Amino acid sequence: MEELNHNNEKPKLKLKLVDDANNAANTVQSSRDTVPESSSQDEFIGNRYSGYIQQEAGAYQGTDTYYTDTPAYTKIKTNKLGGIMGIVLWVALLIPIIIFAIAFFSSMMTYDSLRGIISLSSSILWIVCLADAIIYNVTEERRIRLIVVAVLLTLIYPFFRCSAYQGSSGKYWLWLVVFLVALFGSVSKTMQNQQANLPQLSEQESRTIISHFEQLPLENSKTMDSVISASLKNIYYQIYEYTDGSYEVQVIGLGNFKPDGTMIEISSDYTNNTVMVFELPSTMDSYKLTSIYVNGKRVSKAGRQTIWDSVFLNPNNL
Image 1: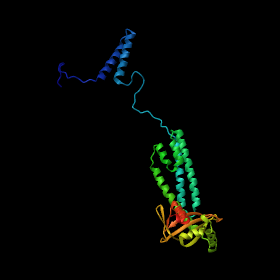
Image 2: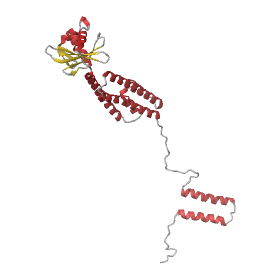
Image 3: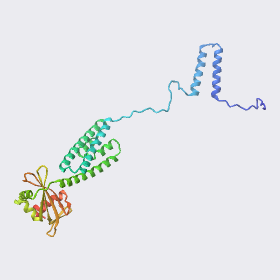
Image 4: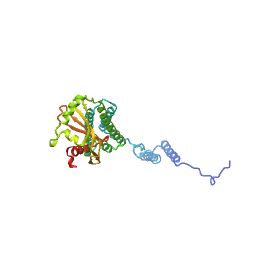
């Protein structure tokens, strides 16, 4: 291999870290071989070596503190009581739907019993919503509107609760749709079952009930018979007895009236199939008009009252 003179010698790459470390080591070794002249010289050498390590390695910053990129753990605050109330609320929301399902598939459920159960489950839901709203105001923040909604608008309270806890409202929309469908389905089916299960009285028993019914006194010294016969033709009755001893009287005939939106039209040309359903107590001394059907279509509550007041009691006012 060709030898290079001192002037042509290629420079060698050296790491500053290695050179400085070797120099520091040589300095320390020299200090060991040579008796120090003074304590100040030892202190100077020690400080220089320590400073070199701190500057080049960067492991320490003059203290014993290590620097790290590991994030600190943050303790998340959770409202355990609010979580428990959320579960209780869902139980209260599901109770009426379960009741509606039982009523829909049961042939023995009566309208009165269903109404009582609905009232009870509604009271439970109202209490749970109110308690949940109060707990939120105590444990989270003051939101008085939650309490107001819980008291006045219980069915939509879950949506306000969802907004307060910053949750998704999709499940509550699904619950509301199922609730309304189950409600109307169970009520309709229960009324059909009740009508089908009512025992119809014998002809002799029916005549007794009809006689009392037709003689019921109304305003202006009129009787039920005179009022009904003025607007219905070809009248006949069907009488049913409830388990509590009260009666259902169905007056069936051809009516000279026709509902038209919010208006009622009377004409002798009308011969609409009409069914009027009355309830009589066991004493048969009073009555309650519960429904009217015209051509198979049930008239609304407001329309029913208008027909009774204007067509039967005061036909001359139209």
